[in-house]
Amino acid sequence: MAVRYSGRFSPGGPGRDDAADTAGTALRRTTGRRLRRLTVFHLVSLLFVLSAFSGPRSGLVPDLAALALLGASGWLTRQGLLAEAAYAERSVARRPAIPRKAFAAVLTGAALVLGGMVPGEGPLVPLALGLAGAVLHLLAFGPDPMRDKGMEGVDAYQQDRVARVVDEAERLLADMTAVAGRLTDRDVAARIDGFVAAARRMCRTVEEDPRDLAAARKWLVVYVSGARDATVKFADLWSRSRDQTARTDYLSLLDDLETNFAARTTALLQDDRTDLDVEISVLRDRLKRDGVPTDPNGS
Image 1 (cartoon, helix red, strand yellow):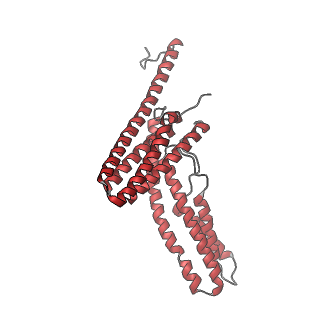
Image 2 (tube, one colour; image 1 turned 180 degrees about the horizontal axis):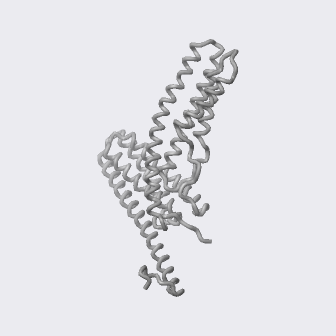
Image 3 (cartoon, one colour; image 1 turned 90 degrees about the horizontal axis):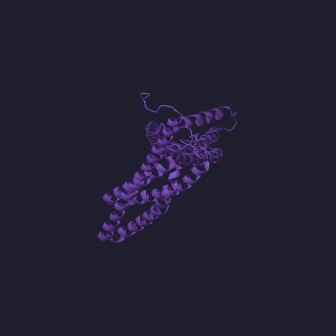
């Protein structure tokens, strides 16, 4: 069965990648703004604490319940925004399995209904308030990604295999980034970030063409895991002793890893280019045998 791979050198690939990069950058910026809005959301939700302990005793339980719902909503919103950022980072990605921000909007609406209930009053005003809150939540934080990206025509089984490897590599790289954020040595942190960027370029390359997985699996599983372990051990040692020899050895390891990951990624792309050249050559031979001219001038 013929399978189309949406790689860098597929027909229309560069244009599609450039557009995806531009869209991804815009979405990452939007996600950053929404994360800042979430801080305001948490601060506003604390108003229910004041209402719970300053109003009549009958409103204590509803206000505290509303506060709990808003806390859950804030947590879900944050997870949804992080999932959206990860989705934006990749040129090939599945939509989040759980629409976290949509559920968060429902919880926000429910919280406002509870908080707006007044003894002896009807439910119309609280329901309207809850509906408005849910809509405003969606407007402020946006909907969840609702469709897969860059997977049209890609073999689902192959893509699932790639996703498992890449997800594990991304988890290990996130651990390294977290360690880098705790280091007081900015040069070391910058070198860690450089290796992480090189490894993620390989992840993106494999996602674009699942056929590269066999050649990249050891790099993304074994070497990334080893780099994460070495980073954690170096950070522990550096925090205790400031051992300059260990620092030099660790930086040398990062240099070797970054150089080799970059070279391997380039080799994967060159293999894709070679595959395309072979396909074009075979097609031209077939056209010649069928008597179809392949010269642009018609000769």
